[in-house]
Image: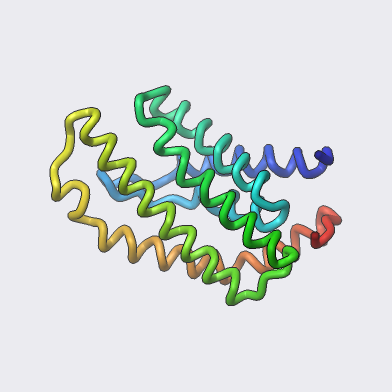
Length: 174
């Protein structure tokens, strides 16, 4: 692995952890930008880097915020799978996604994160005894609306961000 790529991965993982800590939490409703560095790394470098950024960044956030719990891996998994999925699609398209493809890819992966986080919340609430049906489903519609709005915004700006990062850091397309 190139030094520049490893450095970028480390910076993006750190950004993921910091953005997770800066999230706005309202009970079971969390507004965060922690997936943005995962998308950036996966779009720049592919699935392995995307998985590493999502895994390391979210692990750091989980350790700083909650320590190690029985469900820690469940909270990390959505970001690892997002990095894998986005990176795989980017690599399959030769790292040259259109703006439309980027928006669709990001929306689908943000939905994946939201659904998997809802499942983690469901399991976590049963393990730690705070489950109520309303707690899980009460704000699911709002969570999905926020997810899609955030994903459309990400998908709209990411092509320009990726192009700019490639120019600044002299990264090649494929």
